[in-house]
Image 1: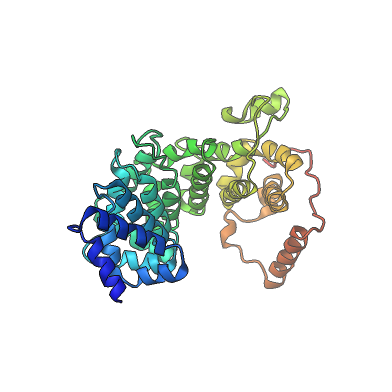
Image 2 (image 1 turned 120 degrees about the vertical axis):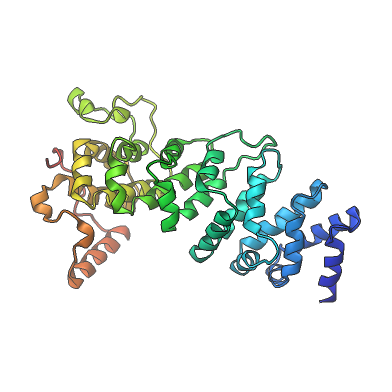
Length: 371
């Protein structure tokens, strides 16, 4: 306890610069062990002082202060302690750092926000603190979409998972899909962003989460967003189609170049397929995908795919698109109750296939989707 009190004195704003810098480095080193992290998390006064140093005029002190906050926020105990600080809002301070185009450690600030919002119960607190700071989601998306926003070299890629974390919340999704806000549409181009796998994956995860709100499916599939071709594009390769087949596809999927590559990460492909699956929950969604002939992209993707979970998802979507609505028998599949014995049978079959067994759809039929 005496050691922590001494550390507090050296971290004080009016302490000598060299002592303050050394003390901040010591605090950063403490975060390198579970015991050190737990110790700092149990001393909110130290965390509050460290928070005040993130914009210190001494750059090494500010950087070490940020390192402390990144490491502490990565642990559940530490994240809870930071969000409970009295006298200052860690979220407000991090947002100030992200918004400042001349702050050199904005990437650390994005990391703190991403860590704090990772768990859903903490994410809601972060959201409330952000709202209390009069910062809206569209402001963060505006910053994310400006590749050279930070003039000190910060890339701000970790701002993308912050937005993904907010998509866990109904209020977050509501702001993202505000039809007058044009937030959702600004995220879509980053689905094909090659400079950062993390940014691309986070944006796709955000869009994936939004697809679980069936109330907005009509908007997502309509002209304002036209999401289905955007989800299918990363799954497409240098496929060869007839002139009639190409003409049946949406413009973004027609006559793709010979060097077109499919999304290389199976986790990303799974999210894309799951999003398409959610859009097939309603009759309107299924008919839209049929009218856009998304089946053609799925058919060629199936020939290429090697990940068993992706293959299974692909086949489930195709199964719905090939069947007629009379065969499906329900406009909204989310309300259909599957008998317990059938549910268990399906789960067992899926588990057997994922473990290496055979699939009932080892090859997809070369036929047109139902009309």
